Length: 276
Image (cartoon, rainbow, N blue to C red):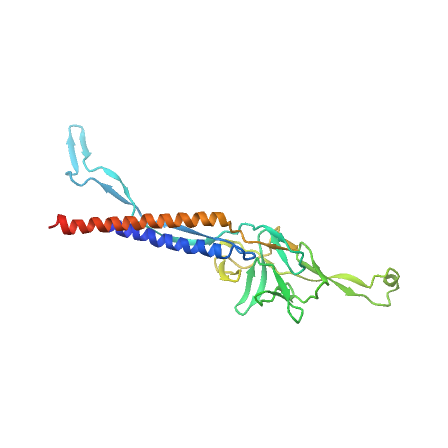
């Protein structure tokens, strides 16, 4: 009887944890570059049950047989195993803003924080008064040569993440003067893009930031990753799917709650009526 109460209670705790994950996904449905989380559970070891009202061994002329056969398995509860991030590509939204950049493929932008370098898929950037490319939360975006300094409407970013600016040429260059070409494109820097061997082991830190861990491995140059300027990557949260999951969590919680209440009622009847 008590085992049933513990099993139902473990189910309620697990569904409460799952609800927290679903609610967090819904709260960030409009967050640029957000990746949804999924809660995974594991069952406690099943208990084998068998008949106990027999002697245990029967004798026949041909040998013996078991008079206490297994009836089946009894579940003993469930617990949270892990919450992992699903890095599925989000849809791209055109903004026509030169400071907005989306990533297509597996990888991250690198930003500098007080805690060290962190990684993000949120490519909605801006510049500060010093001309440094920043996130909207105030973190500088890193290039392979350090901080990225640009001027508004004076740079482009190609698919490889190279930042190209127009540099004024020498006025004594008669050939350029003849063509009325007073500037030439120059690669200023390349955005510091990163990928990881075990991307699933990255840890979230809020504000669409991830940090590497000993299990994720160090940052590596990404393969087949494209930078798309003028776009942002929306979150990969499907609001309808999350709402369905929320309803499912609520009904599962109520079912476990009903099981606990039923066991409690039967236990009270056993103590107050049967024992008396």
